[in-house]
Length: 469
Ligand code: C2O
Ligand code: CU
Ligand code: CU
Image (cartoon, rainbow, N blue to C red; front, side, top):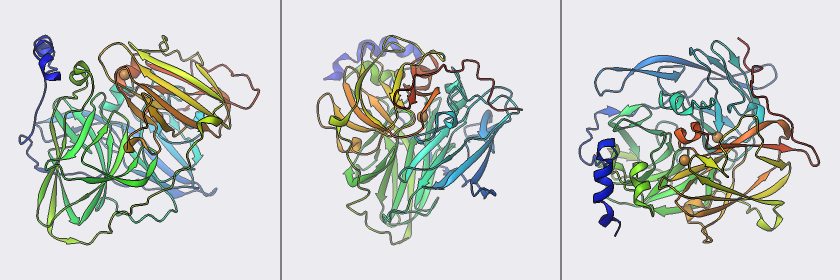
């Protein structure tokens, strides 16, 4: 039905290069998927696991002809995978080797606001910032990326991004050998090329019956709808903040910018199967166009070996999730996203938009209105649970821990979160649209967590304190 409306927008938008793209069968899978190395670390005299990251400029050959100027951590593009276990105290020494101010945010991590790496923790050129915190959340696929005020899109799209895998003690029998049957996949688009871990036209050699893919949408604006070329079902086992309570069999998983999904795919000996992004089913045709949502893109080829090592069957039960009780919520807040504003206001580093009391549960009701562009909504500090989408029970893929959610036009999403720790009246956390350009254009707000009865402070708008050079 939507198709009837095609002609007009296509004509209007053809000149802007926004028409539908289809790369099915056109991508030559000629490059072995690069797997980000695991970051080395050492234990310091206080027992902290210490990592070193250096943001630096370089150049990268994506195999599409010539070298491109790029940025990366400890290399020319993207960064190593940090990995730590629940209960560990970590510290990351982040050196800014760029000629401009950046920051490093730990997306999905529950940690004190001053360690969060948002716009209030800038790292100036040649400075080092060393946040430290105790990892205290379930096993999950998190990531890190810059969050400098108004410049996030530029820094992330130049290549500053990496994964942060959290492990815990729960013994769930899933593929777990990093880079072998448990593979990080940082998916981005550059012009019309889809890159996975910075590899254009990637293939992955699979040597086991099942492979776990940790998918991260690290694109600036594109929404993906991943599936396999033959529509075979796969098991969705995890979302942003950890494993689902039960594995969910599906043939599609939709990811807006910032979201993650862990899937387990079964392969047959000797076969080749393509991971593809299918058109996103959104209600509004304009949003399809503006977010690349109508595109069909070949992403990566899985190449199964003739002899496959056995893999465990995907367990039906994964990680139990205690449901937060909406009746226990201290407050319900409403957030309306329209234009490039949230509740009619653009981002102001000096303004606190919400004051949350520590150790309380809150319901947030998020609605997207107006223009045809889809948005996503990301909250720092916490992992939330989805209560409803337009009054309906959320689908299985929204049944686990989330920190980012796709907002479809004119729908209301109700989420619930517990703000258990880390009061700091002066240093805010962010909530924002994770389409990086929208964030840069001001589609972001700030909240502080305070002790009961405590007044919010004044956020530092110059932030010259962090990162001494
Ligand atoms: Cu992925 Cu506020 O960021
Ligand atoms: Cu974040
Ligand atoms: Cu947006």
